[in-house]
Image 1 (cartoon, rainbow, N blue to C red):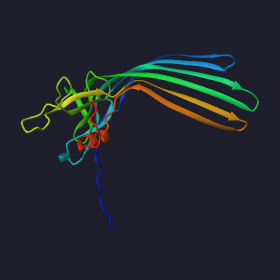
Image 2 (cartoon, one colour):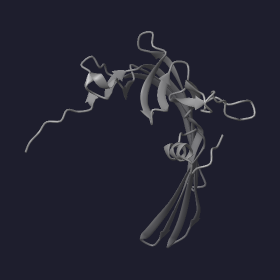
Image 3 (tube, rainbow, N blue to C red):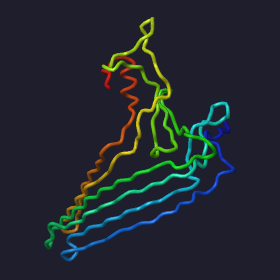
Image 4 (cartoon, rainbow, N blue to C red):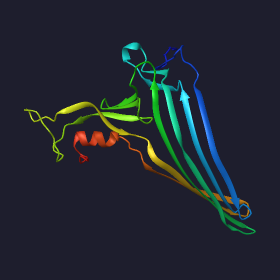
Amino acid sequence: MTYYQSSSTRNNINLKPERTTSYELGADLRFLDNRLGLDFTYYDKTTDDEILEGDIPYPSGSTRALFNAGKVRNWGYELTLNATPVKVKDFEWTTQINWAQNKSKVLELVGDVERMQLSQSEGTVQFYIEKGRSMGTLYAKMAKLTDDGKFIVDKDGKPRYEADQFLCDVQPKWIGGWRNTFRYKRVSASVLLDFKKGGKIWSATQHQGTRDGPTPRRR
């Protein structure tokens, strides 16, 4: 039995190509017969008509659509340190540490729109691109609390909620990685560690557990 199922993402015949203007400044330094190296880059780029995929109302027949969001600026630094601490006939150890910081700002959105919803979860949290903020913000329906963290309830004892409250920016302050490669004769193995500082997430597991009771509420 054959059947036809339409895509949940609506095509956009008015979609325009992105246009990006960027510049970079950098340095690539090598020392000790290439046993030690340092790479540094600063970049700044602005993208017009950035293409994003976001939620649209269900009655439209689709759940997602592609659109030109507006103008977004990204700028930041990248730093990489390379070293070969050990290099003998049959064994070599190389290590690389990198650090990067990216900042972003939504400069313009299409028309007079101040923000656009890209996705949502559990009907509680919405992910937006918002003019004047970094790329990616979370809004949520949150319970009203007193200054000391207690719930504010109505006459029936049910918590009062406020919808569409700003929760956080999701962008981390910086990210990094550390790779170590070990070679013995013709066999090599690598170990990579990734890390980042900052950047907030919303946990659906924590939300569900808190709502249903088994998970303690955290503030």
